[in-house]
Amino acid sequence: MSEIKQRFALHYDWAKHRRVIAGREVILHCHHYNSRIQHTVESAAGIDGKQIIRGCAEAVFAEHVANAFLTWDDVETKWKVAAGLYAHLGFGDLDMRKVGEGRVEAPASHFVEGWNAGFAGRTDPVCTMTEGYLAGAHLAVTGETVSYRETACTMGGAERCVFEAVRGVRDPIGRVERNAVAFTPKAASAFPKPRNIDGEKIVSALVDMPIHGNNEGLIPAFGVYLANTPADFYNLVCIRFVEEMTAKGLGRNAQRLLVSDAETCAMNTFRGIMSSPEWDGLVGPMIKDTPDKLYGIVAVSNALGWGNWYVTSHDQQEALRIESVTGYEALGFRELRGAATDPQCFMLRGVAAGIMALVYGTGTVADRFGSYASKEADCICSGKASCSFEVLRS
Ligand SMILES: [Zn+2]
Ligand SMILES: [Zn+2]
Image (cartoon, rainbow, N blue to C red; front, side):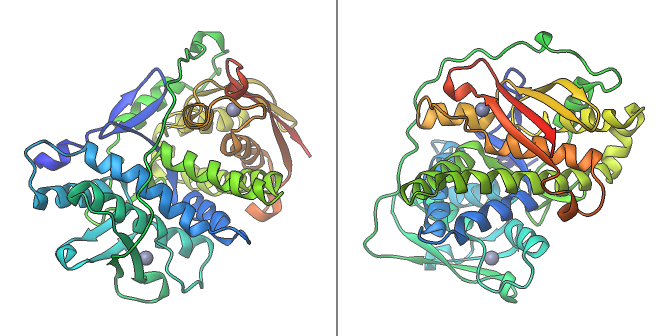
């Protein structure tokens, strides 16, 4: 392993069920989820969704890239670290040879894979997060604040995505301001154990798997493309999206969209996972009946860095109650904004409905969508010990 790659070694925080790379918590989601969230934010009328994605990526990755530097790194090494981290996280391959001339090319892109799967036919550039990543990296490497814009994208038929530095007057790149949050999660022993599914064994096996970018900087696994994205990025994007929509009187709509995206993605992602050889080898042998599939999905999700959640009651196809003790949305909201009166875990709420629809529904993903309704009854954001979700057949 090269010296630079060693800097990205995974640290798994068992207390929070969180993945940490280069000192930052990262969350595994797949290309379906990432492109769908981006599509929701960028296509909302009346707000500048692209600027939300770009601005959040700039702030988050300026810190994350700098965190991977060593004090004696020269500028050339720092750019290698920036490209190496991007590829390791699974976003794709950055060719930095012309970065001194303000040009970066990308032969492979996680985002293009996602948009091709969910929104084929689009020709506008889709690698908005990469624009922000490059501006953040540029600040970390050189101390200079510039913008990057994608001037050609493989989504539109170009051979490579092309990003060009734009110099000119612009706002400074923001810092990620966090409140210290003192929080002790409920212990696993407070929850019933599934009969047949050994959750700890599944999480351990997944934590030991090398889930990082291949030589194209992509992570094809479980029938999807995964990426390790900083929790701060997801949280800042979703919080700012809801805030900007709330200012237009559309806050509830924004929340519903985020829940729907997660519901759809849970079905796509876990359908891919359940038909993969990794699932057959690891989870398949433990499954004795249909509810075991649901417990298996929950165990797999507990290795993705979302936090850990536990089924507290499950009445076959009728109802599910599930409790999350360290969800990244709730803890992130408290760090970034403080306490809230309303629940804030839109991703987990949508996923809870989606996995019920996947396990017990019939037909296509579109047929199953909406067949279960979920709500978050309690949330860590409003001072509760855990986030509780109730899912009922519609
Ligand atoms: Zn692109
Ligand atoms: Zn919550």
